Image (cartoon, rainbow, N blue to C red):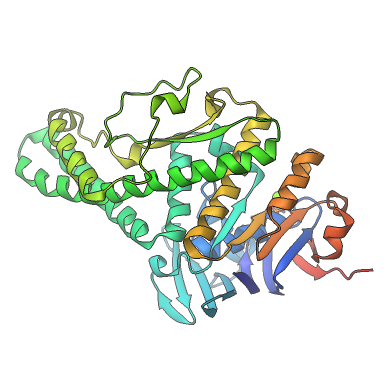
Length: 404
Ligand SMILES: Nc1ncnc2c1ncn2[C@@H]1O[C@H](COP(=O)(O)OP(=O)(O)O)[C@@H](O)[C@H]1O
Ligand SMILES: [Mg+2]
C-alpha cells in the first residue's frame, strides 16, 4: 500500500502542508530541526491514531496555533492506495479545557471510532530513539507491542481496551476489599472478564513474538553479518505454560530451555489457566489491593547469542536489534495483510556503517513505499537517488527537488 497524498494543518512545525506522494522510494532531506522526523510521525499518527510509544500526544499540536488561534486545531489527512481501493483517513485534534486532547477520526469523511481507523493505513516507523525499545523499561515494550498488534489485529485492539477498563475496575474493587473486607463476591465477575480479555492479549502476543522471533532472526543475520544470532523471548507475567522462571542475568540457550514451542496457544485454555491463577492469588491480591499478574506486567527479551541485550548489549548490538525488530514488524504486517506497509525510516543511515547501510537498502527494496530522511544526500548511492522521489524540507515547508 502507499500514501498518495498527505495534508497537515498545525501538526508540530507544519502549519500548512499539502503533499502528493508517489509509490517507491521517497527521500526527505533537511538540516536539523526542520521537520523530517515530524513528517514521519504524522504518517505514523494516521496509521495508528496515536503518537509513537515514546512520545506524548499533546505535544503534536502546533504551539503557536495553540497560543494564538481563537479555536486552535490540528488536522492530519491521508489518501491511501491499497489493493482493495483508495480511501481517505483524517484525524482532527482539539484541545479540551482540562489540557487533554479530543480526537475525531474519519474514514472517507464518515466519523469512526479509533478502533475502526487503526490499521486502515499500515506503517512501520523507525526512529533513532527506538533503541529504548531494547534499553528501556518493560512498559515501553508493552506499548510497542500494543501499537503494533492493534495495527494488524482488530480483535486484539478490542481486547486491549476492555482489559484496561476491567483492570481499573478490578483494582478499585481490590483496594476497597483491602480496606473494608466486604463485597468479595463481586470479584468473581471481574476475574472472568480479566481472564477472558487477558487471554486474548497473552495468546496474541505469544503468537506475534513467535513469528517476530523467526523474522527478526533472519533480519539480524543479514544486518549484523557476523554470524550473531538474535532471538526474541516472550516473558509473560502470567505464563499459561507454567514454565520455570528464567534468569536473564546470565547467558542462555533458548533451544535448551524450550526445545519445541507451539506456534500458538489456545485462547480458552489460557483463559481457564489465568482464571485459576487469579483464584489462587486472591488473598494476596486483596491484601495488596491490586492485580499482581497479567498482561499489564508482561515483558519481552532480546537475546543475541543468548545474552540479554537490555542488560548487556553493546550500543551497536542494541541498535541493530531495534532495527531488525522493525524490519521484522514490517515482514509480519506484510504476512498478515498481504501488502507491504509504508516504511518510514528516520535518519537511519547516519548511524550505520557502510555494510549495514547496504543491507538496509537491499532490505527495503520490496516495499511499495519508503519514506526515508537524511541530512545529507551523500548518505545514498547515486543509483538509488536517481530512482527516488526527492524532497527538501526547510522550517516545515517541503519542496520537490528536481533531478539534474
Ligand atoms: N508542537 C510543535 N509546534 C511547533 N513546532 C514544533 C512542535 N514540536 C516540535 N516543533 C519543532 O519542530 C522542529 C523539529 O522538527 P523535527 O522533525 O524533529 O526535525 P528534524 O528535521 O531534525 O527531524 C523543531 O524546530 C521544533 O521546535
Ligand atoms: Mg529528526
